[in-house]
Image 1 (spheres, rainbow, N blue to C red):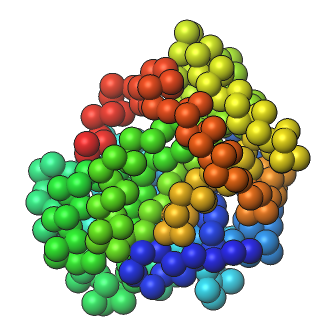
Image 2 (spheres, one colour; image 1 turned 90 degrees about the horizontal axis):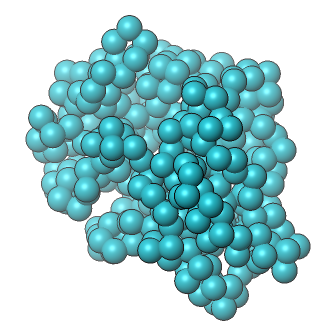
Length: 327
């Protein structure tokens, strides 16, 4: 396993983390036995960064990680998130009031069966709560030792600057992959200016870049991809053509498409730590294989051009979900 440091925070983690959301929601039926086995395998293979959130399930994912990781806490880095209001088992909007942040952290600590959260993200920016108040609330939890590092998710440049001015932001988590590159223009340069690490989620384009994607209607209604605009109709067909180059390069490198997509992302900078999500050991092992793939500059240029933003069809989220993205 290779290791990286998230910006100026000093937080050292495996070069690939593990996104755990799919173990509890959004991508097919849960399989606890295989999920626990996958978590075991991740630790065996040297992965140290495990990403969850209170809203995944809700609550089920943190409980799963608590059962799997509490006895082996050691050098493992657990990242979780606050920022949603959860009522009757469903998210009903954002809520980053300082008192709510503390309530969430106390509950997350109990579910995770741990005495500290290594990396605490604000899941989505709350327009009703000044970022200075959010950062201040997390800073007080850091002073108490309940949280070690502060992070943001899907925040825009203004929110990042405002938060970082009050309490150092260790990492930003946002979507970034060959088929979603909106962070390249403004976000990544700002993170490097401020010394903030970057943790891309959905680095495989929700499976699209693996070459195994199906049209939206082929997924059950409980699957996120059922309503993903990029999996629908003409968008699906256009995106398949754009992503075909990933499969072609994979054949040239004796690799899988997923490994090529992750290798491209890893090559974008030593401050980038992708968190591909899976609940199966097979895909975990395949993803880790990306660390052995070395793309040439020509390969990188080919991928950059073939999957340029103007060649990807459809918005990355539905209109409802885009409303929660702070840019």
